[in-house]
Structures are given as C-alpha cells and as structure tokens.
Length: 216
Image (cartoon, rainbow, N blue to C red; front, side, top):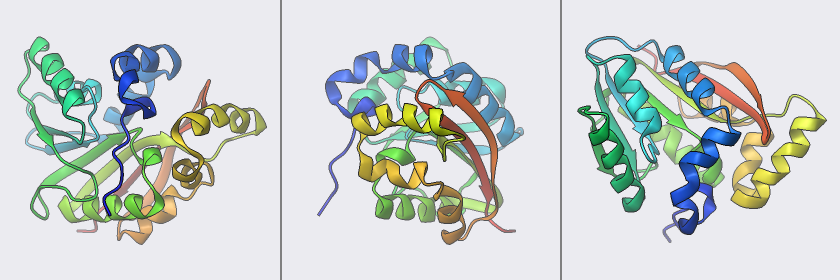
C-alpha cells in the first residue's frame, strides 16, 4: 500500500507559511549555505536536490555553481508550482521534476552530487532505507550525498526542544533521527566514507549535516 504523502510542516494548509517559518526558526541561511559548501560543487557536476520543496536550496546550489546542471525533485505538485515561480524570479535554469525519493525517476549513476534538506525525518524507517538505496543507485562512482536533517541531540535541552518537531511531524518517522541512526542507515545502503560533518543548535533541536559517497 502506498504511503500517505506528508507535506512540509506536516499539513498541506501550512505550505504557504513554510518558507517564512524556516527562515525565522531554523537558521536556514546558515545550514543551507554550509550544506552547499560541504558538497564542493564543480563546473559540469550534475546535482539532484531531493525533496526540493519551494527550491530555496535548489536555487542556492545553482547560484553557488552556475556551471553545474541542477535538478530539483519533489512529490508535492503545489510546492513545485511555488518552486517554479521562485526559479523564474531568480532567472535561473533549473529542472524541476515530480517524483518520490524512494523511486527516483533517473537512471543509475546519473548524478555527481545528491543533496537533501529536512526530508528524511518525514519518512518511515523502510522508506528512509529505500530512499538511501535509491540515492546510492543514482550517484556516479565517487559521487557524494550531503544531507541536512535532525540528528542525535547534543544535550537534554536539545532533546527537549525536539519534542516540538515530533509532535508536529510524528514520533515514528523522527525516531531514527533523534536516536542517531542515520549514519548507520547510510552505510547499510552501500555508501562509504559516512560521517556527521557538522552540528547546529536550533530552537527545535540539533540539526546535523551528513555526508557519504558511492565508492569509485
């Protein structure tokens, strides 16, 4: 049976306020610029942003490396309409595709970099595993994945703050994140050189930046 699609902030009626909420509460400019810098994009790279949402990260990827080919993918048609408007306003060439993270509509070994931001904590454990296996499949040998999402809290204050996220997004889908299981899941998907590269404190808990690669 197909899983129910979960929109940004957990409810479709909140989609319109997603961007301002993220800017105001999540140190968005900081963590997304760090994620892009961590990816070390180069001219000619083909880059996929999975769960691109309204394309804030996708636009930043393209601006950081104009000579890269950038693709954004999301499962929400309304969000993709907002993303298209944002891309047009930025006067950038970015492909926006409708699709789902656990069944990517791309051939094997078709991207040099895959980035994703605040997607995994919306997915069940099984869908996370299928998503990470799909990321491994579409990465070229030596290609890298860079993930920004909730991680294991550094201290009780960050753990307490994360309860707010769990109340909104669900305890079942967020358990892998808060229990620190994402690195092991990346390894289980066949990715190597897995590490938590950075941690940021936010008002909703610990945000972790992960990286891994497909072996050459």
